[in-house]
Length: 478
Ligand code: SF4
Image (cartoon, rainbow, N blue to C red; front, side, top):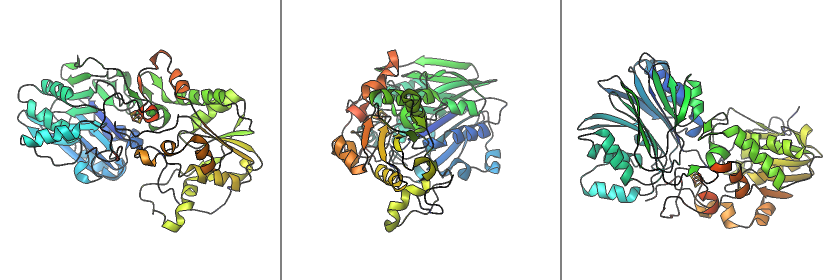
């Protein structure tokens, strides 16, 4: 098959997607090379953050740490890993949702407190960080970084003179918002999940050890067996005496981020009881039932639209085709386009296949539209290949509200669904039809668990109170 415009190259400048947050990984496994296993675990979680990576390893007496800017294989060499010796470790990959993208904000954060050393890796955003940081600074705390994670460390360090777990409990009472944490001391691994369970965190077993990770795919990668999800409001302490669970706070209304299933998480992960790939496929089936479009082929916007497109094709009986080819080798270091090359941006990442598309009525399935900057370029590319009709189908409801819990969804003024009615969006992207999965249809996929999800970016119903700012998402809430 030939591509539509062979030899034509350029780049994707600004992805028109919410941005992933962070990924955390922890391991307690005497007798194993925990630094290397953490490296592989972070590799499996790389999609959750590409700005920085770090690993902290403890050997019972001290904690060593190494972290830097870049992808996991850019930050760590084999030699570097050889120097990280111990029997327990934590790791982190980061995309900055709060705090600037600077080395000082890379995690894990490592601190010395009156009881010893402590390292922490955090996925999520706190919603009362401004207030807490002011209180802490007024009573003498100093901060090295601009991350909300350092507020957590400060509270824990302040109350940890007697008992570390008591200090974590105190911290969980004070902080509000989204946090899945892995914490390391000289001889203990601790996993913590906020009382709403916004961000995922699961546990696995390894012979003679335990693993905690943002996604079960990371457990699979290091050969660990899935044990269970960390419960909302739970602290799990792993050490010489095995695994101890403390249900600290009564779980509040569960509010798992539904966007993990729509876009963020790996399709092979199982999160809070649901396999991501199966959920995405079902989203496509429901979408096809809600919008019976007449068309010749269904194509995905790869990769996040692929499972939903397959589900759409199965339910509608319309043939599934791969009409867009994705270049998988575009990295962060790619030279960004100049202003006059902007319109070429999408094509390097996604190139249409004329032989599949020409003369067809096409259903194009994507997961979401954020700003709408990519969709009209995709539609134009299809039309340039001779497509007769383009029906854009989204496997999520319209994103009309910002996220304050650790996802960069852009501020509300930039969200196209907050700015204009659907028919105007359809005209803007030049599609013959524009269809979003209904919120009701999305929630029904989860059956009796349908009330366990955060859907605030669709319906504005925030499970934990937020102070709305213009700069939600990537930027600090201050
Ligand atoms: Fe996830 Fe949206 Fe809730 Fe943020 S607002 S946690 S992106 S469902």
